[in-house]
View 1 (cartoon, helix red, strand yellow):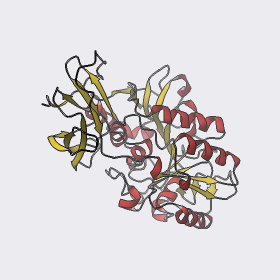
View 2 (view 1 turned 30 degrees about the horizontal axis):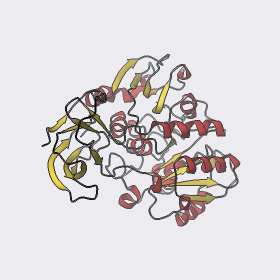
View 3 (view 1 turned 180 degrees about the vertical axis):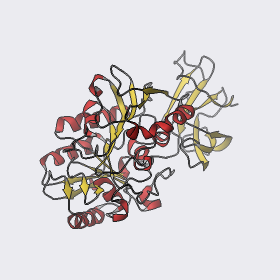
View 4 (view 1 turned 90 degrees about the vertical axis):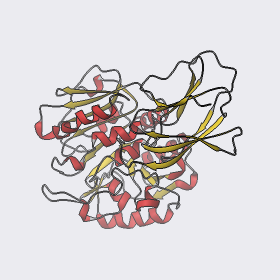
Length: 416
């Protein structure tokens, strides 16, 4: 029977000579968004938007019904509130009920009134998401949640912009996101504290991220104004007005990078470094604020939530959105469905098949087995996933060939 359920912090096993008993197959619970739950919003007056939408729909096999058409004059940094309200009403009416999230296909406008356009699409325009001076804003109910259906559960459709200033940039971004799926890259997360004290406030959480997730992914805290020559960048989180030498690093497909500063979300006309520079350098997702937020950590991605969600199998859009408590002033950009840590792996260790389960939210689960794909399934054992480390399950001759994992309870925390 099953040799036992164990949490191993080891690399994936190399495939040895195949055993006499069949390779197991596994069904994991759906805990992340997929192409059927994402709608693509295209501006019919913008040739670049149309081209991006067409390419992305094809690369991600997004249903044709999920393409939502709008029409407005492109290229403006800010869209007036009244114009946006009418536009969003049209979008909501045309959106299939099953859609849980949006992908926008432009870099500008990036703002609506005093809000980011991604939060305005997600939750509707609301001045409570804005602030004059150094004040807190309305929080997101999606922050830190385990919801995989945010519109059904919370009435929000998290939104991300497939942003770039030309088609080649966005095509490369999309291709990186698709290429990252299920690769479980052996990269490094660089948590960089700069000499800019005001913009390095997130450094207070760097050590906790390393403590929680350092056994699942390499995380390095570095005290420097920038890094250069790194060939394995998976995360690059820092704080500075301008980040030097970002193109002197190699970003792995699916990499996330952002810098805490006032106007990194002014994508096309910021006097500081635009978050678009991260995508141009090879990152697959980034974030920046579109108006002065002050340096409240709640208005920027929380490294613990961001890294933990991503490692536990969330898509890029889910990991980023669940990491920002107050997203009203910040824009999310990147390839929404990138999911490097999705799925599971199977390898033979010389005596047994080993199933390595990556994409699970921390919580309790039940493993069930059957001799046929359609069942009937019977309970095998219970187990708990308490952090970001994958669960590895070994099987013996005589065990079922088909398995499925059924959630019993989830912890509600990226760290378990």
